[in-house]
Length: 112
Image (cartoon, rainbow, N blue to C red):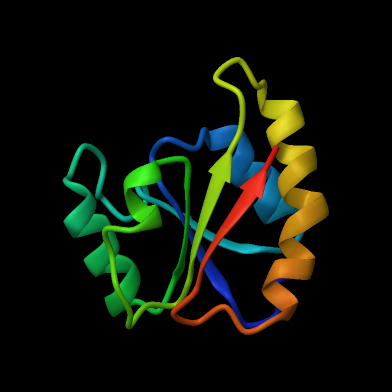
């Protein structure tokens, strides 16, 4: 599982993905739960920083626009037509390995 790493799922992640990650034991907050829906990326990044959350997003702007300090950014790159089930499988396969390492101040990409 994710250990002590808590995740913030950006709003471009669907609620089913969040639910599946929570069921698998990950500590997940969605931007909707944090009342960040439709806010600018700056607000999402600032919230993640302030709450020491690793941001999981499909928004490529986070690849280079936000410098440390932060608790990690994981960019999920997948086809536009990728369905929830394939995204969930991909995240469940890759997140445990990623989160087992130190990801503070790191930007990583997952290809699904």
